[in-house]
Image (cartoon, rainbow, N blue to C red; front, side, top):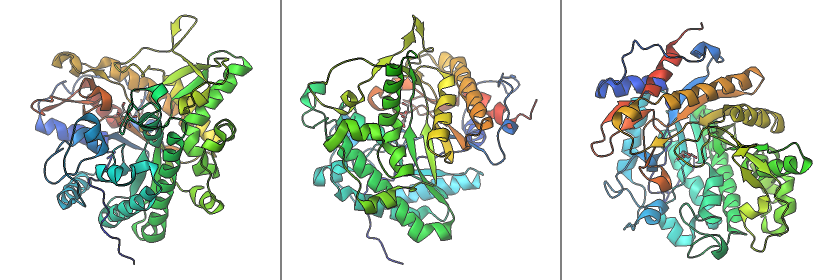
Length: 473
Ligand code: GAL
């Protein structure tokens, strides 16, 4: 076996999907009970038995959003630390961090919780951004594969479900087209960024992310999979895009939107190339996979994680070629959130998040039909409340329960109609740092007092607990 030099990654960005019922039980031990266990919740007739044998339920969280320790215990800075404030220092493997994950994994297993570990959730070691511009450089591919290799070697005896990236599309689009997310790059025409090129950089970054995913998956398959008997996949965000009208033009626009969104990543992974619409529209700005890469990228996931939160209407804006080129411009699609004056669904606290359960069904059936019915984990789904709500209001989260009930009902419908979904994970276990919104948005099923870090289960946590405990009615 070849040994791998310690990778230059500073923190291990593990996303842990854990069995909800266990988490709720764990949290309750630590803190007060918010809702009497005797309350009988409406689960819409759903129970654990409504789902196929072996189906896993969990909750998701990500390192940067929940761990803290920004300047402690040798944790090195990531690009998000600079994006939100100035950090100092650089680093190498943080052995205290490794110990922390060892303890966490062991603890989960002891409690009968299956860890699903994701290697990267938006954050990149700042050292690599400074060294060679991070995701923009092809050099990141080998460094990522080395980091992944280190994780497989160190944790793979106990972690059997691996993901390479969470939402690479968001990294490429928000980081390099609009500049909303770290590292905050875009063309002058699209935002107040100090540098960037929205016409080319999102595509270069996405290409390097796909190659990094593939390189990591290859390491796993060649060196570890047989012995460790695990699987490796990737998490993709997927907003469902519904044509605003039945016109041909709106249908094409919605299809373009799906291709530029989820197709950008899933198409290469299943078919070895970018969607044809993207190839035609982006032309020379779209990097090409070599013949060798096509072979490697195609089939590089044992399963796909789909993060599904919301749905928008899409129409053809009938506009001529834009003056300034950029990823979002390339879609040539208009967004609408209401039709004939009727909103697409009730809005959550985040302005992008509408509660549209039927979009879950359509998204899953689309993946099934267009992408050869791959094994899917519905890896993120949830809604947020305002961060400044009173404790009583935040705990009494009936809107969230209603959201989950609607979406999980549609998930079941998709499974019944043949979608190969093997697990569901709610976002999120805990209220956490919601990127640009900071602590002003709460996605957790467990309430966190951000001053004392005291945790209290919300009603939705009890709802999940009942859903999972209940026998078929
Ligand atoms: C996802 C993301 C999470 C979380 C969530 C809610 O797209 O992976 O980190 O922030 O959205 O906005």
